Length: 116
Image (cartoon, rainbow, N blue to C red; front, side, top):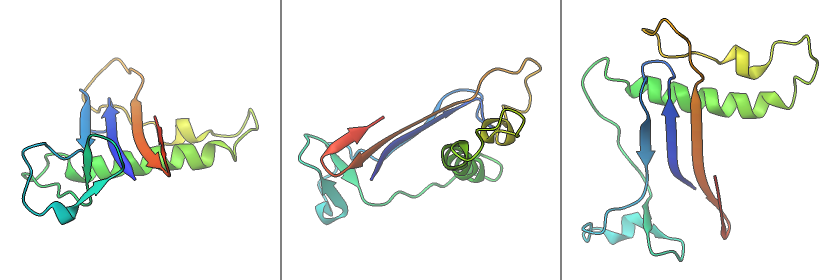
């Protein structure tokens, strides 16, 4: 279960952007839509991302896809001359002259353990 996804300096996200699936404590209605993993915080089963045109909704999805591809393909490219997944999916913030490193971070719960 994805708890949180953070992206920075990728596509249209220059600053840190976070998708957080943690439910707020004031959320009392429809508790059937929450997941309790035995921690003090409950997680949302589903989230909706909405906003104006060109506000980054698709880019958030693409950033998650790039993150997934980097992880899955990085094990395949061990040859020094091969184009690595990191280079292949490196798409920094478009309107910045000096290129900085992109950052991805995901927190997931698998079984009883939380991974970051």
